[in-house]
Image (tube, rainbow, N blue to C red; front, side):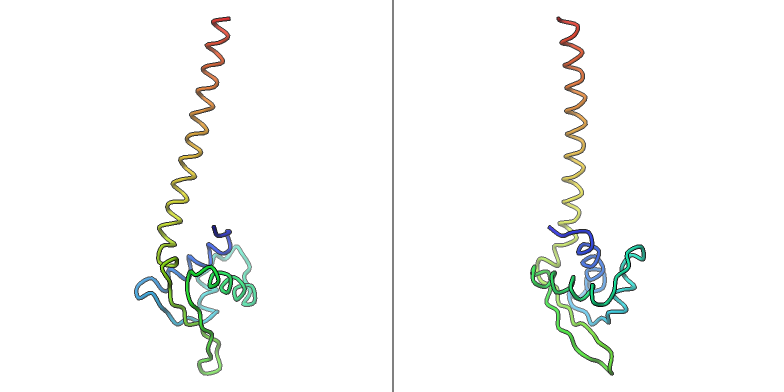
Length: 118
């Protein structure tokens, strides 16, 4: 399971590479695709990308292109399934919240019933 920052970076990578499953992207382009409220630096981005690579979401190769650092990113099956897994996570969370609310209402009603009986 990814933390919030890893999820944001993976969302940006997925949006850049979704058509072909691979892309050539500069760190600056990737930083622009990330939410502005979090202050990401290139070093922090590099660490998160390496962690995602170790988790087998994609393969990343660093290269230089005219003196500018570039990443060649190729999505793996986990990377292609990222969008589906994030939707599934939201669905599971909504179910758990709904179940909790229903259980609380049922417990309240049983409590009222018990007061009337005794």
